[in-house]
Image 1: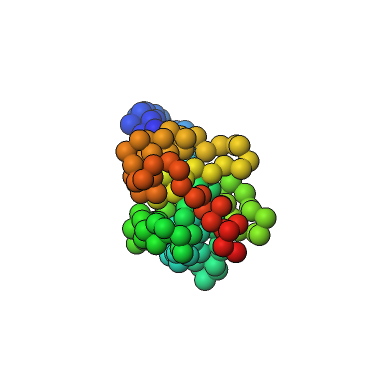
Image 2 (image 1 turned 45 degrees about the vertical axis):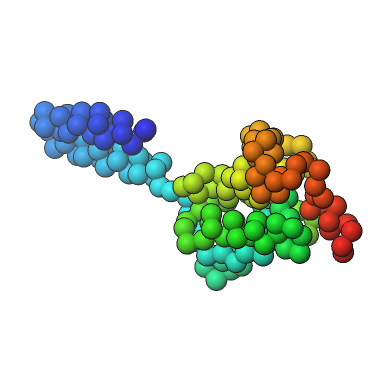
Length: 184
């Protein structure tokens, strides 16, 4: 929006001031203002430097990102996907891979978990990937902190009503958390 304002309104105005200015100093000032405003508008609209496109997928809610040769483990915030050995675990991993693989995305980092992984939402051109996994029934809403995670409850309810993914046989399922307690 700001860049449009600068390009459409301010730059032509400053160019008109430049054309009407008579002294050397006023022309210099007009050139300086034109360049400064265009530089500022470019800086405002520069996309974030932390966009990723290299990923390793562990399961449906854990990935490793690789950026500049540095690896970082990321746990997807607000969701809990089935474990790989659990029913629908492989499907959840494939769904995440399909949504994220071979495209740029950004991380909305919310913090770190108890074992040091980043806890983040994956944002791409498709939207909030974490929420999409819940909407499609590949993960359930999980928010132990009770903070953030807007829209996830509604996404899970919709997937349950449509019997998608993990909800295909109803809502009486073994959660990934219960599966981990029983299996490990």
